Structure formats: C-alpha cells, structure tokens
Image (cartoon, rainbow, N blue to C red; front, side, top):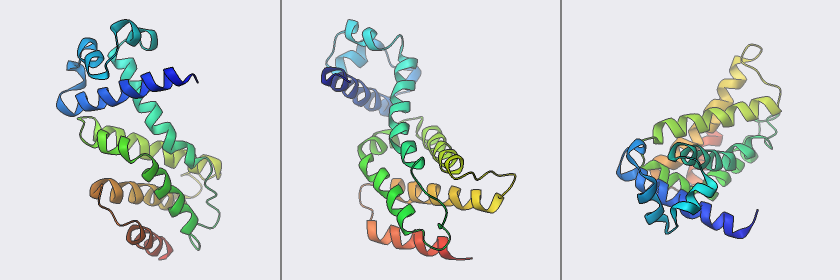
Length: 176
C-alpha cells in the first residue's frame, strides 16, 4: 500500500480513537475527525463513506493484526508445552499496545476486546481443526489462553511484567 495512504489512515485511526475516548462514536463528526487528524474532508471521503465505515475499518485493521497471529499458532502441544503459544500471543499484544491503550479509553472497548478475543480463538481453532462439538475442553483452553493473555496485559497496561505474565499463563495452562 502507498505510504501516503498508510500515513493518512494511521492519522485517521489515531484521531478516531482519541475522539472515541472523549465521546460516543455516534456523536463524532467528520469535521472534528478531520481537524483532529489534520486532513481535509475530501481526504476522509476518499477513504471512507461515513464515520461508521471508518470505525469498522479502524477496528478491522486493529483486530486483523492480532487475529493474523492466531492463524500461525500450532496448538498441537499447548497442554504440555504452551511456552511458544503464550510467547506468540504476548508478542502480538505487545506489538499492538498503542492500539490497545487507545481502545481501552473508548466506549466500545468492552465490545472490541470481546470481538477480538472471539476472532482469535476462532482463528486458532479453525487452523488446528478444533471445534466445540468434538472437543469442548480444548476450545476452553484456547479461550483461556487468548483471554487470559489479553486481559492480564490490557488490565495492567502499560506497566505489566512480561516474564511474570508469561510464567503465570504457562503454569495455569499446564495444570490438569
């Protein structure tokens, strides 16, 4: 993608999240978003048809960064050797900390995090051929792995202790 497009979208996303931390998404106007992002209205409309589409795109971009990781997680040995899985999830969350921090202050945070965790669990289960009908316990472990890592980090951001979280998650997952 063209660097100018990436830069513009990042400015729009950042401005959108800042405004969403101050007010309900439905009350954000294109004009104030453009002022905050330091762009023209015409530039906004080159990228989006509406504020709603902008929000969807912002959330999709943010969540796709995390969910993409779920497609690479080999869950085969998670019960006995969860170290790599926990490390990979923590890496993904850390790489996207600025988005988590901004989302944390918005009114849609709870919905966004819930949807993100569900999407990541679905991605991990799908790539590893795990489904709830055949193996409820494995789906529950994946859900715990994803939810636990995300919750521990986002609740204590920006001051979480990576090694402590990693050890805690590994110890809990290894318990029978």
